[in-house]
Length: 309
Image (cartoon, rainbow, N blue to C red):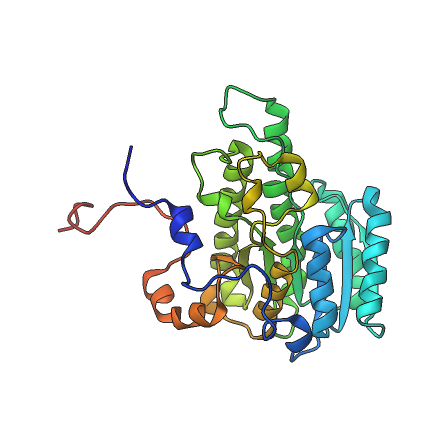
């Protein structure tokens, strides 16, 4: 077995300083959005998605649309009420969507267009881990399919129907997929085959979006939200990993606000982590661009190993 440092270890330590919750200076209520942005949060019924909605409410979004499965209507209504408590003047609308259905996502796009006219930011938080299955000859194949239907097919459908709306934005044109550093995992006690591979595919898909629509000004990134003890995590995480589920549920929302406050095209197509220190990330800008970091690749070693010298 290779002795190479694991990608997850490298990713976790990409900045020397890491955060488990938003710092006071990083708190959305202290970092107002400079522009009037219309924001859609898909998967906003609870946990990280709700935290993202609260962050945009505190940061002063122009309007906020919350979308989730129709079966989560009660939970979305509770999130809507909390958003109103945080920002009573914020126009807010709740809509239902099944991101595994192209008809449903198409209808959501039509409804969003009718509601706000111009859409500036899409945050796709919907995700599904499925049961933890560590070997491909185990588990139920349908669970594998279900995970891909949500995490990959769902991301594709949202991009397919919403990229045209984002291209009409006057500037922000931002597509944020809540991804995971699980995309880097191939072994160990949380190497859930379906989830890890689907998140790998999602991160690669975000890179495709950057290549296809970067010239149109679209910024597409995947964001690892941290290790958060969400409802889904609580149901599926093995006991051996539970001690690591200590990151704050609001961390991802604060990071999304940072991404939305200033458009940084040099981050286009990359897998980022909300736990990273943004000041240190900014210091690495030249290195990230020069070496095209934070993307997946096929290792060939140096030029001689690849037969180019």
